[in-house]
Image (cartoon, rainbow, N blue to C red; front, top):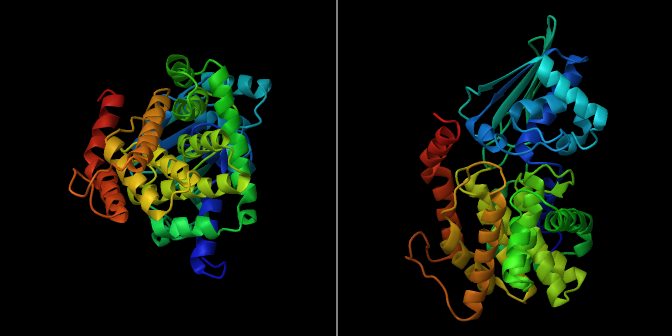
Length: 426
């Protein structure tokens, strides 16, 4: 693929849009970002906060620890952290620099001020609005469709900014993901000038490796990563999924280290990258090979998620685990045929895992997804594969990915609603 090919620049743009740093689970951080921006627009510290959030955001914020808050959880803590101590210029690292005094101020605000949470009246899957009040003044910021997409800002009920709503799977100000295909992704990775992605990919390697190391040596969540290593040993097939799980162990339990996200998710960013990094180290692969493998893993993950949407009842770790399997296959010299079969095999194994919000058990789901990606690769390596007509698998990797998008976006819509009702005790 030549640099002059429009697809080449499109893939570079997609990577730049998706591989961004974030601290903490991205849904509570999106709330903190909206809240910090609303306080900035208000121009003073508010005395009351109102948060309106869609069901899927409520689901993903309910059980996760908000970093830099002293182990607080939930929507209220997320919003107040942004209001009291957030820096909106840092976007998804909005509460990265909260100090001890900031944590005390967050706690005091929660104890002494009214913070109200209600369900969004919007039909959008991803929709949140934070309104802050001070005496007779108010300011509101609405984010829709993806985590940094501010669509509306008001000051004293007057519009000061408005942006057209984006489509769920992409956005008017994002590169069109419809351009993506497995064949093109592999061609792009093969012909890529690695210097074009060096900064992005190296940051992903550095950030996500660091939080995985913290997760494996510390005591975070259910310690899925260390349980895997202690039970089955330091074989690369175990270590790859254990280190990815460990990164999630730390992240879901409030670790303050940033990660580089993929498809709006830190867990997906960790899952798509850490196993590939571990395999590259095991194989002694050079930086160029690792970069190309990570490009494959990231883009295959994004390609799957495009059809599913940012939030769904379909666990996003599955898409990233499949992407990791494709990246590992690339490290072993796999081309289109080998990578396509790895993807299809892996999707046949784990496409039934549900998303029931961000929490410690995400780490275990990540381990299962990565194992499926690795098994999918080794199946084809040994001459084994699943065939079209086996359940939801259809002949052709693009057709199978389309089926998965349909399953996650349409088929699991009612499942998503029931999961949320269960979680909320309704």
